[in-house]
Length: 311
Image (cartoon, rainbow, N blue to C red; front, side, top):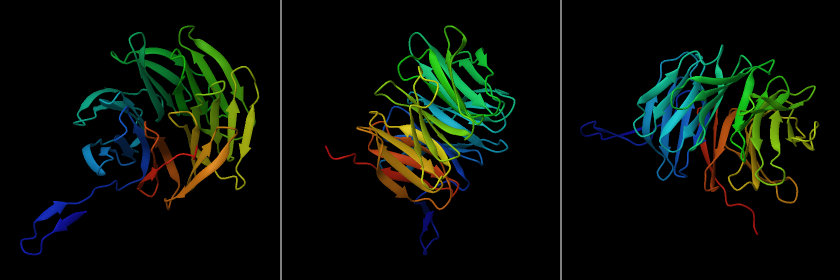
């Protein structure tokens, strides 16, 4: 959107946004900066203080971006429909590196971990494989082909970075031990393709999945069946689920809604937001837990201010 003066027709940029479906959103370590990407290949880094674009780029790739994550607050890693994993500098959007043909199909989910002892990029694809790449060299370190259908979400364990988790459209959740180089935990259900995966910070650090049947399933690594099941009365398709940075709240998106639950003393619905006119594709908590960002097929980014529960 531009402001134009009628005297000389000079213009000034007022605001900018995506012009295609916004497919993914994520924060790094900063609470005032986040990134988003769209199906037309646009990547934008936003300033939450004034909603301006700090940096942007457009990648010419069929189908656009499918997923993204940050490396600290310096770089953005994204997975693409054209089977690539790409990395861009967050301040300039200059391309830093890419992994061509990372999967035999679209790259549907990515995550990263980096510390003094272990640094890697974790990716999942439509081909059902989970792959671990060395962060510095981008060489393939490990591969797990356990899923029979596409991988919807990968996740680095909140406590032990040598453990990674994956959820798939084949109604299964797996945990892999990178040190032992094998799968160590498996959970499965008969129906309900898993569309999202997150992990609690309290309790037993249970995994939480959402599925196409409108269910939230809580999984303990020592119990084969879900330890808790929550069913949406409308059986709406849940597309993503995310535990807040403190571990107290759980946000989900399904159809056009964004719901927030309080995990303390049970799972209680505490807030519901309707701001999208098309299905919500992704959401993410800010690191300070004061905002939730959701994106959808309506080309919109919704910023939800979150004030928490009364103590």
